[in-house]
Length: 147
Image (cartoon, rainbow, N blue to C red; front, top):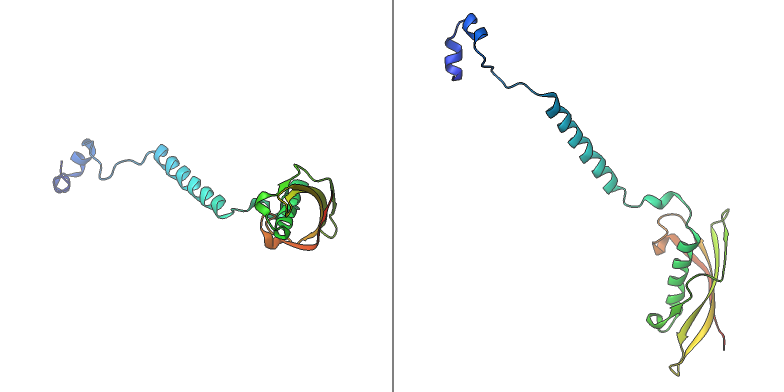
């Protein structure tokens, strides 16, 4: 039945006909639409917050990783440096956000031989993402060769 034919029917004929002007909206389709909309909003909210770990202090492992970056800056051939798997000594002053880290590295000397050196880094965490270099301020960086 066309809409133009619907207008020609009287009230009793319209009641007896099972044709409706608009299809009924099902509750399932309403909830599905709301669920998809909520999922999109949550996903977009999470994707905008890419740095979740900003509001906490860096761990010992994270501080050690950043200290190695500062040591590599001081080396002549940082690509050939072999760092120890963990820090020899690590002290964190949480009140002032100062990190003292000590460890060793094997570097190539002028003769082409690998020699072991001990390094120490004192750095200050200035807030932000721990993996970004500008979140740290190196206070003292020393490398001492050991025979």
